[in-house]
Image (tube, rainbow, N blue to C red):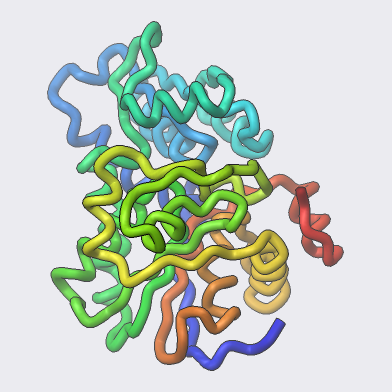
Length: 289
């Protein structure tokens, strides 16, 4: 892998208590709920990391948490949800995506926390942008993995106010890069989506309203191959002694590929919840399916 001409900084959200940035948005949304709203529990739709954030907060508040998860969700994340006391309901990917689009899942009680579109969730994510400005000056670009868009939108919203000269780029796996395709087309489009070890990012399309929210805030988006992403996971482990999941390595893959150019670049390492078998394969030089 070639060296990057940029000065690369890492925002290690993989070191959060649940191993992911998702605890920020989950905590803000649940703490901001109307009085009595969570008495019967909380509910979210998630492939794993938001589920852990919601389950963590539910455990702290002594209420049940139910998670609607896609069938391809990694076992490492499902096991973590169980350890936190959450109940998982597995559904096919298309049904899970429908629940994301509709912002509900009929038949299950609980206060619904949308993992992406909830304003309180995006505001919680935006605290990352606030911290970046407090901790580092003269940031040329921030690279953010894109799953549903709540992380990129939250960070970019904060930076637009506090550091408007900083560019924000989204990073997607090329096995499902609807934002890249939509930016190229000038309007939202759907793409073919293939599940991969980059389970926390990518998809077949953009969630409702996210296109209009994100488009004016972002300077562009980069599609990354699975090989590039696996190489970034390996580089982080070997050089920085940081364990990250596929989505968490997307920003580093983009920075090392020179797509983001030169200057001071911050990579959001969004999470570190990767299956041990997948990590082992990557450290051996292989790219998981």
